Length: 42
Length: 155
Image (cartoon, rainbow over all chains, first blue to last red; front, top):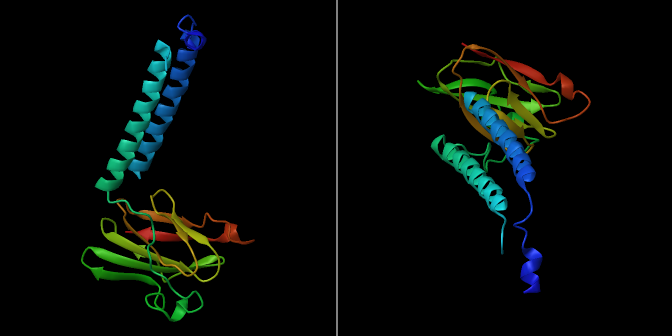
């Protein structure tokens, strides 16, 4: 029971983390697409 | 394992992105018949100039739609007769080195091969646009590395 409580973190506000992860993810996806299109264009 | 709702979102985002990236690369590679440059062909690097096809470097027409470009890389130049090839025809580049590791890179194309002494590196490419293309070595091969370049004319 104690162990379960230790891992409960639904109360945390992770909106900022989600936003940061999505921004970095969007940059990575965008760069990957650009590199892929450059490769296919040759 | 209990995950926060947002943790599930970014984990799914990452996994989906990875699967899509690898899927697109895999499908592209198979559909375009991409293979690593080179193969299992070997050659004695001290006998290159007397071993076919490197005893006659240059461009040779194999049939109506295929040409072969045989090139010897050595410090610090590419040895071949005049490199002139037609656009729209398949060019099979065969390159080897007599001394150290070089590369055979044609600017603004996908041709980017490592050239290793003792091995024959092969790459097929079809130029779509006529013009003069720069060939250069992008493997540091010695003090004259920056002088190692040539040109190929596509007509």
